Amino acid sequence: MVEEKWVTLSHGRTRYFEGGTGPACILLHGAGIMDGGDSWCFNWDALSQHVRVIAPDFLGWGLGDRFDGEYSFAYLVDFVRELQDALGIERSHVVGHSMGGWVAALLAYESPDRVDKLVLVANGGMAARTLSSMTQFRPPTLEDLEAMWRSRLQPGQGDPRALAERDYRKVVHPGAVEAYQRILNHMNHMPTRERYQLHRRLPHVHAPTLIVWGKHDAVNDISLGESAHRLLPNSRFEVLDCGHSIPAERPDEFNRLVVDFLTR
Image 1 (cartoon, rainbow, N blue to C red):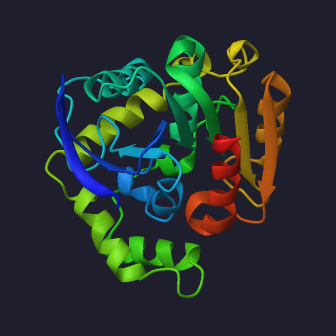
Image 2: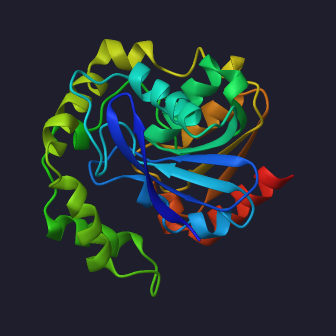
């Protein structure tokens, strides 16, 4: 069973979800203000049958304390190392979706001794451009979130209204919008995006890597995944018939791929 837990790190309390036994596997979510450790709710039960799943709210996201300062990629990457330290984990598998995949790849480059196997899911960091959803950000309404979930879920997969209400708690959490805007200020700064691009780094990442992409991804075009595959020396590339939100749109297929990769 996956449980909600809390850990105190240098910036304050952080929420995470944990379940299962075996090798540790950290799941890193994407960049939407409504994202968090619970973004992996369609995956953690299946994965926790084989590994020790740990799904945190990133520094600056979710229901925990906010960092009182400017955010940076450096802080986000070090957040993962600090979480490993706090939970007594010397090294782990790391699975990252979208922004979480960008951070996971940076971690594998900077701290190869901290990463066993790497799973990059429609990861960012392959194109030096911003997204309109980030440059024109406005906090989503409850109705926006419900519509989003209705577009993502397969029939019978979940309750769009309940998921929207869960995520809306993160949007209206005290300090959430202000902190998120500081995050966006950093991520939308073009020199920053260019400095932290993955093209130079990926050839030096030797952890076994599974890259998963959606055929119809409108956020990160599939050509970016193909480029990552060419650059990573020890990678496997899989394409699913879906958009950008692969873990929620095709959970069964995604879970099978990840379990097979991590347990071989």
